[in-house]
Amino acid sequence: MERAIADQLEALHPDAFGWALHCCAGEHGRAEDVLQNAYLKLAQQRAKHDGRSSFKTWWFGVIRFTAHEEFRRLRYRESLLGRLLLQLTGDAHDPQPSPARKMELDERTAELRRCLAQLPARQAEVLHLVFYQDLTLNEAAEVMRVSIGSVRQHYERGKARLRTLLQPEHLHETGV
Image 1 (cartoon, rainbow, N blue to C red):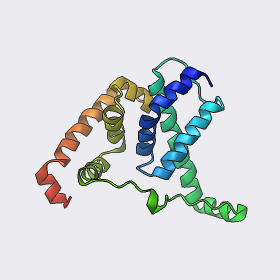
Image 2: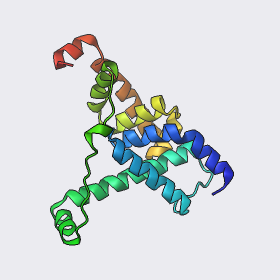
Image 3: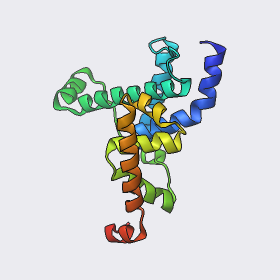
Image 4: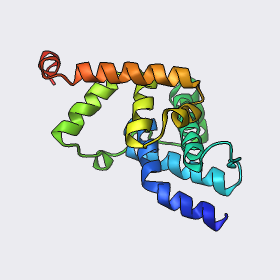
């Protein structure tokens, strides 16, 4: 692997883990696996940056795609056929991380997470990419593989809905 790429990956690692954590619904163990598999794809040259977007945008797209692959694989393992095949092969895999690995959240973070969880997935993804990962809307569109118009719409709707959900009177109504 080129030194320049290694340096970029090292600089992006904290943000990349944050994005992987988001893509894995906050499950630390799965996020670690996803990020490790994304690094593995890069090392095995199964993923190559072609220069059409910034390195960060491209890397976040690789992580998102890897998370979706892992989710599909996990769903298959949880299916009846998947469980039967696991019994026959003896390959036992616990998809749930241990309680010790769960993040401890302060009250405000927990409140924000509950509100974000009420948003549609696309709106939550756009808001995460823009606010937590400092991507532009264009870069978010590339990561999500949707049009810029779609990203703008999800971004505006997500912000408006989040604003409503975070209002004190709404929090009291929902028991948050």
